[in-house]
Length: 229
Image (cartoon, rainbow, N blue to C red; front, side, top):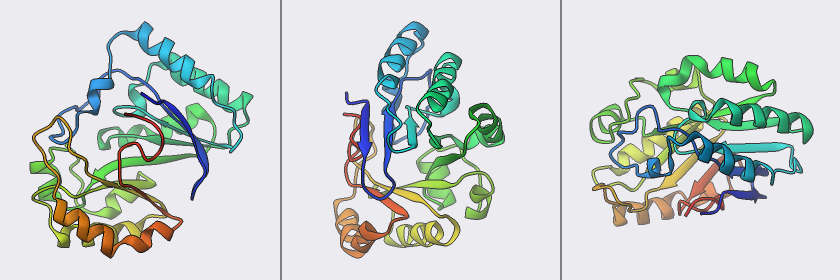
C-alpha cells in the first residue's frame, strides 16, 4: 500500500493516504475502500504519523485522503496536520468529505487556518442513479446545491447501467459550475458493481481532450495519484 506521493502534473502537490475510523455512511454499492478503515485508534495514529513525517511542504499544497471523510480522521491526526501546515509552510489543503458533513466544512477551515479545497464524491449528478443504484446517501438535486458547499466534485465513469447521456451531462455540469474536478474511470473491485468496457472506451475517445484541461484530473486507474493499491 503506497501512502505518499508527489503529484507534478496539473495541480502540483504532495498527497497522503491516511487511515481513519469507519466511513459515516459506508453503504455505497460500488465501494470497498472502507476495508482500509479501522477502529483501532493506536494503529491509526501510528500509521498516520509515519506517513505525515514524509511531508516536506515543497509544493506548498497538501492533499489528504482517507477511506471516507476527513472528519473521520482522529483528532490527534488532525492536530498533527495543523502543526505540519505551520512547520512546512503549507499554503493550501485538499480534503474530501461526504455530503452529510456539508455543514461542518467551515469548522474544518477554521481549525486548519488555511484555504481548503473540498472535494466530494458526487459520482454522478443523475439523482436516481446516484441514490438508488450507487446508494450514495447524497440527496442534493442540482449541481448548484453542491457548489454552495464544495469546490471540486469527483465523478465516476464506466459503470454498467450508466449511459453516455449521463456522462455527458455530468461533464457539462462539472465544467459549468466548478473550477476543479476529478473523473474516476471505474475499476472492478470486490463489489457486485461491474465496469462497462464499451462505455469506458467511448469516454476515453470522446473526452481525451480533457487530459489537457488544467482544471480536470482523470484517473484511469485507482492508483494514478500514486497512492493506494
